[in-house]
Length: 81
Image 1 (cartoon, rainbow, N blue to C red):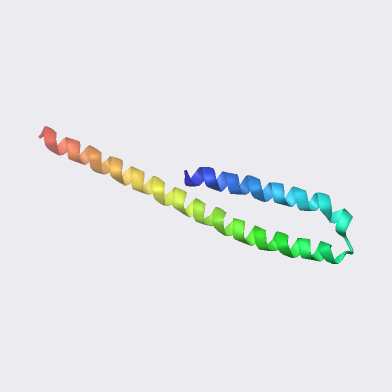
Image 2 (cartoon, one colour):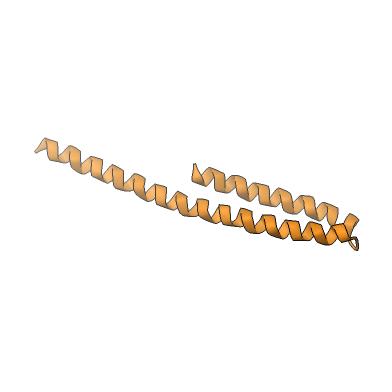
């Protein structure tokens, strides 16, 4: 789940960059051009933070899954004795 969200955020960041690059030549020199770049930087920071947190969650969730599985295996073994 977290890995999927991280990949979606990566895709969104690439789309944002492509969209801004496509507009960049049209707005160069205009005040809206600098505003666009400021907005782009802000969104990249926010989305980068979300992406990083998702990567952290993905690793933590995988570790929990392994721990639960190992616990289940040990519990099952204890009943066989």
